[in-house]
Amino acid sequence: MARACAIEPDVLFLDEFTNHQDPAHEDLLESLAQGFHGQGGTIVVVGHRLDQVRRMAIRGGDAVEIAIVIDGRAYVCTWPELQRLATEEAGPGPFLRRLALASESEVAFASVPRS
Image 1 (cartoon, rainbow, N blue to C red):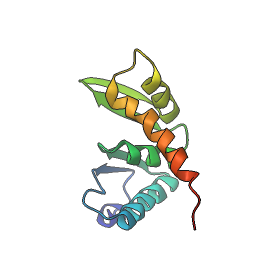
Image 2: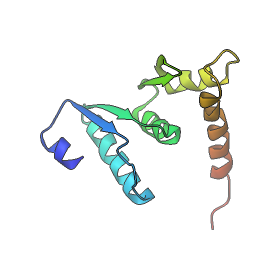
Image 3: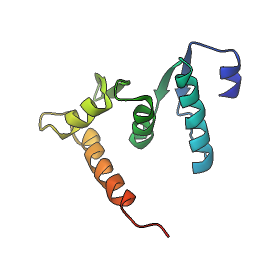
């Protein structure tokens, strides 16, 4: 990623960019990507981990567009729209329904007292 950013591109393509990284390095790489976005760059993230897609989208603000392909059909929407789509009965199925469950478990985990 450092080599890609060194040439100051307008768009940064990140394909599974935290694959095989420990959580500390994953956080660092996500922060670097968000810093690039904060400086006006565009980020295209390819990933299968919806938790990471969510973190990247939320850090970018509600207006960040997400493109997702499910069963050959493409959806382009913001994260809040994706969450709404995931809970609709006519939505794209169980893959996105995990979003609602993930959001609920994150809220529950955040409320656990820390020592």
